[in-house]
Image 1: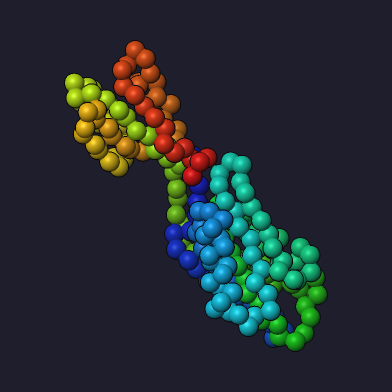
Image 2: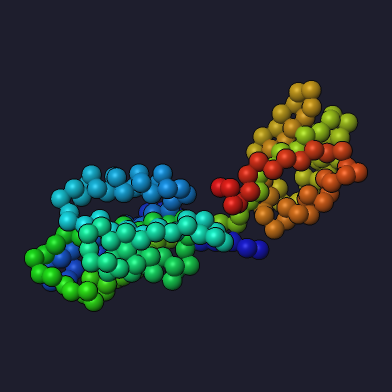
Length: 204
């Protein structure tokens, strides 16, 4: 079953070269807003650092990603960080490397090496979390269809989220993306059950 990996919890890494210190921070993130919040927090905490370089990868399939050198020579910081995220097979992941300049220039190759090792150190220490993409859906049915719905829910690995009993009954639940087409076929006409997709993996 298709899945992806992200970080189970934040982790940190460190590298030092000729007086310059590279503090790496790795996070699981679900949106650009979370990326911005993490960056803002680190910039406040390490406000006296010269550079806050970072990279992130969001989403599955068609992924959104960015690498930022934050004043370092082009492609010497953000790209090595991004390379470590991708080589570890991670998504929904942000890595920020904060640099304190030590007074000696490291050169292009030295910078690439430093940011790569710092990012790698943070990701190496991280616990992984495997995520199975879910489709969130709602079933609308009558009281007379309750037994039919209960049999349907019991026959699939479905996670119930909410039940509502009013004029019509409603169940909000989620199922693995790869199993959803089978569920959809069972609720298609001539079945009178109404199924509405609330959130697919590409929407989350």
